[in-house]
Picture (cartoon, rainbow, N blue to C red):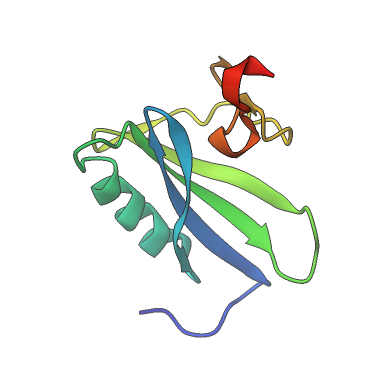
Length: 103
């Protein structure tokens, strides 16, 4: 376990599943701990990938994707849009934004 947050950053880990990008799984104060967790999470059944994003504390909107793992292997981090409806692989609408009957 790491000590106090240094540099005002925390590292969030979340899973990417076939039909959604899941909520943050855990938040770490050390990048190495977050990457170890994401590495393991990426091998769980039903998980396509696991990602690590750093967030600056007390600075709304300041964040950056730092790691992506698929089946335990580190990948190049793709460009991630701030538009939550657009994924790195094209148009992906979060299920909370979907409406019944396409309307």
